[in-house]
Length: 265
Image (cartoon, rainbow, N blue to C red; front, side, top):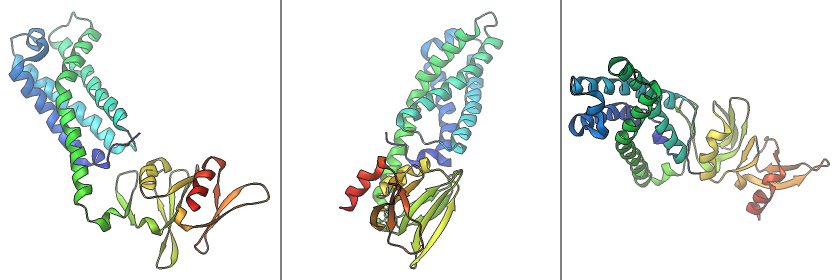
C-alpha cells in the first residue's frame, strides 16, 4: 500500500497538529456545545472546563506528535488513520481522568473514557481530515512545481529524517543492508564510492522502487541498468555482475531472479 508522503513526518505538520487540534476543539465546544457536552459537564464553569480539556488535549497531542516525529515509522494511509485515532484514544484517558476527579467522582472511569473518546473523535475528525488533505495537496504541488532536474534525483534521509545524500538514480550501483545501516554504492567521476547511512532497507523501499532499483535479495537493492550479466556459480547461487570496477558480485535469490532477468532482456 502507498506510504504517506514524507511531509507527514516533517516538523511543521507536527506543529500544526499541536496547535490546530486543541484550538479547534475549544472553539467548537464553546460555540456548538456538541454531543451533550454541556449536559455532561454542567452549566457551572462550562467554559473553564472546556479550556482545561483543550489544554489536556494540547499536552497529549505534543507527546504523540513527538513520538511520531522521532520514531522511524513508515505508515500507509490506513495505518496513519489508526495512528490518529490512537492519539484521540490516548487523550481520552487523561480527559476522562480529569472529568471523573472534578465532576463525576462516583462514575465508572471507563464509561467516562468511552464518552470522552466519542466526543473527542467526532469533534476532531474534521481538523484531522483537513490537515491530512492539506499535506497531500502540498506534496502534490511540490512535485508539480519542482524542477525536473531535482525530481530526477534520489534523496536519502537518515532515521532522524535529516537529508544526507542526493544522487542521480543512474549513478547508484547497489544498496546493501547491515544491522542499523545501509551502504549506498554509487559512481562519482568514474570512481565507485560508498556512503554509510543510518537507516534500514524498509525505509528505502519507496525511494528505490520509485527510481528503478530492484530488490534482488533481502539485503540488497540493485540498479538493473548497471547489471552486465547474471551468472550461476557451481553451488547454484546466482550473482549479478555489474559494469563498474572493483565492486562485488551481488547475490540474487530465486524470489527476485525472474523479475530482474526480465528487466535485462
